[in-house]
Amino acid sequence: MRIKFSIVIGLLLSLFLQQSAWAATPTIQATVSENTVSVGEHFIFTIVVKNGTFNSQPDTSLLEKDFAISLPAQSMSTTAINGRAVHTTTWQISMQAKHSGQLVIPSLTVDNLTTAPINIFVKKHSNQSQQPKDNRVYIKNSLNKQSAYLGQPLVYTSKIYISRDSNGLDLIAPSLDNANVEAYGKDKISDTVINGIHYKVITREFKIDVNKTGKYTIDSPLLTGNIRKTVSVNDWRTKLISEPIRIVGNKLQIEIKSKPASYQGAWLVSDDVRLFEEPRKANQKYHVGEPITRTIILQVAMIEQSKLPKVDFNYSSDLRIYPDQDKLEEGDQNGVRYAQRTMRHAIIADKAGQLTLPEIKIGWWNSKTDKQEFSTIPAQTLTILPSAKKSVVTPEGNNEAPPAIVQKTTETAPIKEESALFWQLTSLILLLLLIAMVIYHINGRRLQATTKPKIKTVVEPLAPAHLSLNKALKTQQPTIAYQALLRYTEEAFPTLNKLSDLAQLTRLNEQDKALLVDEIIRLENSCAYPEKPWDSHRLLKLINKHNKAKKWPIDRDIMDLNP
Image (tube, rainbow, N blue to C red; front, side, top):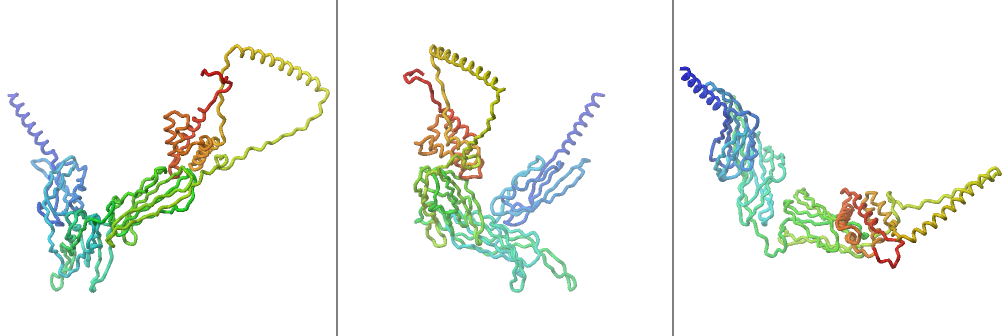
């Protein structure tokens, strides 16, 4: 009997625990108010979480690709089911499809719970606008040109005229097949009076980039929302109501043409292309090794900065070029949007004489004149002078004058008779020391005759140019250090033609030679771009290491060929 009772109690407890676990298990569900909608039509997307922990909100950013959405409206409630409390959290999101087709509302995650994706069929919006009869709200559309070439963006402008209070207005972008459509710039708000009615005018621009040639019809943007108006209830009473609107404007035609067969070079189409240098370098003079910094600017109207072409400078292989990273920008000039590429680099010439910077040319198709044109920077001739030789440079950059020799004179006092004995003893001691040195010298010569002479080495004394280079490097000033390095190489390596070949003439090992090449490049880069940090310690260490390796033997017999 006791065993049967225990079994019954166990079954009831198990059922109770299962029911408690079921009641506490969190669930999630997503629904929509309609599965078939039109572009711009509002529908409600609902997410319901039961027994959640409420630690997170749904991430609605995934919806913004295909839908215009409002902020989620959240509500919470608690109900009792079979004596168990069930906590429910609900989010409702008002949505509008941006374009037609079979769209998918993706899975969203809340509290580690994931909704199932939902398929939505979106029809094209009706061309019939639901517009107030008194014409108090309307749209006018326009294009910046009626035809364009492939790769040339269009500017589509919509002006919304509103004469009444409005609420929840939303403008869906114009639709066009084979094209990318995106908002362009910021909305402009102004006021105007038409036929005695005061309107608020909202101007929005779209950039349309068509990727296929042909003739197209661009449907108008769709304006949805509500406007408020006063209606008469009876002869003595009125009330304010909200009237929904769906307004479209006029359609527009556009033709996209292909690249002309006569065009030569990489395709670039625009209304305006500008290429210039700041400042020009023509007829200027530089010294060998002195960096020549150039700044070239390319401006193209109505083009994305990512599509700006590269510029070929056509430099000779004899020049050393140190380019900086190009700077890409966008801006407006006289109401026209320009993309700009700023190119900055330094040139270092190794030879004196005339240096010609080649012509820089960019071909482009002028959509205003319908012909190919070229933006150019003419060739420029510079004079390269030999490197300037200067006297020894101090760390402060001033010429170092040798210290003056100051001769000191002292008056000799008369020797007194009492000091005569002192001088006699001093003379005797000096005589004994002299005799001892002579004996030591004779014994040393005898010992040297019986042993093989050792080879002594002396370090090459530092030349003035080397001293100047050491001091210049310690200043951490690239220009001073570079000029000092040029003077040092002219004195130490008279046959050197290019500074880049210096490492091969040194007595450094191969690893140090590679390091020396890198340090010279860093020094030249720092001369070209003073704002970049530079440390002279590695270059100073390598130069000194080379000079310490330059030793020669003395006291060696000319006929002694053994090492």
